Image (cartoon, rainbow, N blue to C red):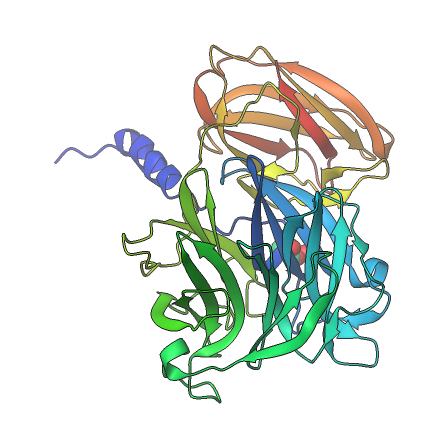
Length: 444
Ligand SMILES: *[C@@H]1O[C@H](CO)[C@@H](O)[C@H](O)[C@H]1NC(C)=O
């Protein structure tokens, strides 16, 4: 048979592109314990944050990301930290959740009270991106438990569940920052959580994610430490009684913990979880990933598998509007940082690093590309590649030195051949060391 590399290479290129991993969804830092919330036409994702190289859970801050299309995620940076938001705590910035009420946002977060136990604090903000402040200046409750999950029932009564060991809830008052009636412990039984190897003989371990959908209440949780898998129970009310329904996702993927979150967004359902899929990933350097799924007609959740594909993009990205450079479907080598003037920028850009932006709708064609950049060195170049990292070169922007990493300047370059809807790759090239920072970009 006649064999031609020249004919095979484009085919291989297409295959490689088809399996391009978009999970885990954040590549610039390690993230864990997903807590997504739909606000308007976006999903906001609260995450906690494993330090690079970590071998423990001495975690310090909480991060926020958002997406309008499930593929391109914008980094909103640190929205709360133990050091700056909760002076009464000292360590263990772990899994939390945000909920909207009273035209405000409330965020429930576990952390260790200075000289005390694990406690749950509550922060409040007028905008989900902040500024967030400690709502009451002390723990909302302290009973050596973690993993708060919050739901407002149809009658307006809000419930804050938490766990590990055991499962508990309080009824939050309408102000969302206090509760009435004391802490209720939910009995765990085999009928509620299945027969398993946890000390109570069930599979329930931690990380409950409680919500209602089509008249059925769901409690999706991390089961059977360790390695944990994800299981769920359902019930006729927010307080149960819970009936065990089985496994949602088997344990896999280099992290011995997991933590589920489930949302519906633009007519589709998604399971968020974490594993150790990034380079350097482990049980202490975790990454959040997402799988789309369809409920069975009886409301049960199908068995899902961890993939590196991620969720299909819903819609497209408009390249003719200001796009924050920290909006990424995938990236390699780059990091993000709060800018001195406010906002977030892309930093630590080195030769060969890149950012993938999924599904940019160029329409009839772009003529130019502009970016706001800063560089304390001599800069470098941004190659605008279409379809893949080695795809069509639609333009090359030379980025000059600006005499400072926070000294921002607009640069513009011509673009040719960018039309239709394509994945856009910003490929960074230059000498050694950090080349430049990018604040935002826009085609015209
Ligand atoms: C972790 O640090 C290494 C070494 O500096 C770096 O190459 C890598 O990109 C970092 N990863 C994350 C997720 O921060």
